[in-house]
Picture 1 (tube, helix red, strand yellow):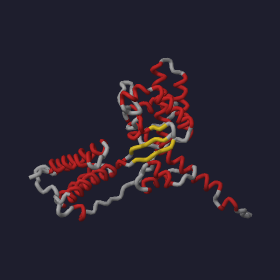
Picture 2 (cartoon, one colour):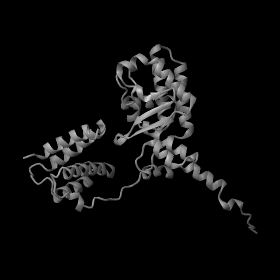
Picture 3 (cartoon, helix red, strand yellow):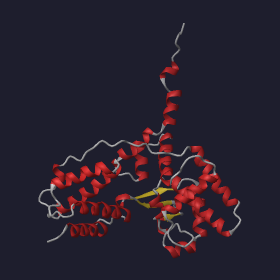
Picture 4 (cartoon, one colour):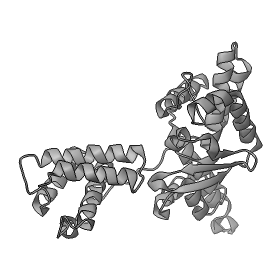
Length: 308
């Protein structure tokens, strides 16, 4: 008789090789399903509605809503697979109300002038480089930040880029996003194209040896954490009094495009969102555009009122 652990292991293998989910999603599934397995320890009735219901109640007591949402989604996907394989005759999730109110946190963005200052600081550091190593680091760092802001890609997507994903003849980048979805982003700014081309030329040997487009000093794939530390360093050098994360360049990309009246459906595709409802959160951030509309286009500004 199969145990819950066996079912989970089989499901992880299915997700990895049949659904081809990325390593981060697989890691989250392993963590979330192992937690459910531990909760069910000592019970053979691990597919019952009552156990699942008690587990979800415990999640709400111990985790933030966003984490609860993810853990429930992991478990629900697993149960759906068990139902698909006809191991479950009745899926408990069909009779569970798992909806709950989740506070919407507005995405944090970087002001336009701060991005300008940030980029100027990196370019200045490149010009002031005192060694070949410093120059190479600056060339790479410029390409990383320019591409993050120019494309709005996630940091995980950027660090996973392969050399074949970058086409500097047509200036296209092939991005592998969440849910194994692919999208192509055009680089539309010459400075970004030049920065990417210079990086590619400077690091060509390292790129070929590593197999990834962005490499570190050890000739391995550049990690998310390395980019975060790099951003912290340049933020301090630029004198910017704001904690900046890689994802904030993505938020700023979306918000600033909205402020330029770009249709939200185009932004949705560029960000790789499966649902436009995810993209719509940026409409609440665009305060500068809202102020411009109310100051210059509100009909009250056209009224001449006699105030006595």
